[in-house]
Length: 147
Image (cartoon, rainbow, N blue to C red):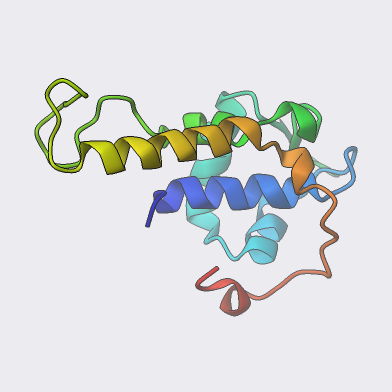
């Protein structure tokens, strides 16, 4: 798994929210059902996304969660950063603490290449690129397993 479960859930929740009409917040329970993310886990993810100013939270009747800004202004790297899940420069995949081109570990070149690609993808992909997806309706968590 390239990303942690928390990071995947955050991307999944934000992607789903990007497909909804801007002015219409969604309740956490409905988002949980639609995305297959367990409700207790989702609440922790949503809280971190609100704290990172990626989501708005409205309480009361008609409340719920919605994107804090347009999908084109939210890059995947912002979501990963909110979950502390973005690839870190200098981290050694071999377990040596840190390594670099002058003092590489056996995995340095391959790991650096992968990190650069993930960082590039996450920095250059926004929610706008997936916002055109039209949900067919709530899906059961059974349908979402393994996605």
